[in-house]
Length: 231
Image 1: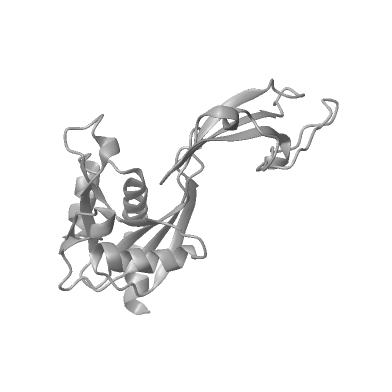
Image 2: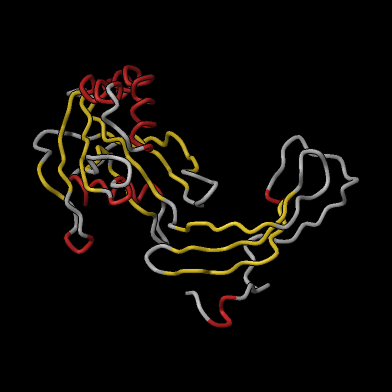
């Protein structure tokens, strides 16, 4: 939290080791985390999410080191997103819920999304996929395939998404779901793949992870359906 002596930078608890390099050293084909020197780290806020201030410098493409700089980073943990797909009915389980961050830029902050959740300590990403599918949509996942791992917005947050496609039986699925103690109010629908992809093309889907997953489905849906039907 802000305030008092805690507002000073501390040299303790650095998240990277220090790797000072001479500017005369040749550049690598690609920089790594060893080409970043963390000088200080300060927690500005710690709640459900955290805000951390880093002082650092890094190697430059032209050689040598950058000047020291301060960067504030939003720490919200890492997450899993699951595309629930029924190969028998060729349909997708999609959900809607309110997102406060959307209020600033859209008149409809109830977004079309997929199953998603934060990875808790001690959980694997695939365990989160199964847990969130049950909690948010009443789904039991069958086969699960990992699609991508990507950074959400690395200029300002450390969050990484693990994206999966999960096999479901969508018969009887739908209605309202979510955990009351987490203030979740989730409307779940089962829609034909063609309809969901038409919604994507029409700009109705604004959630980044959902866009990425549906674009993957647009490219690979036929192969996925055939593979899971045969298996």
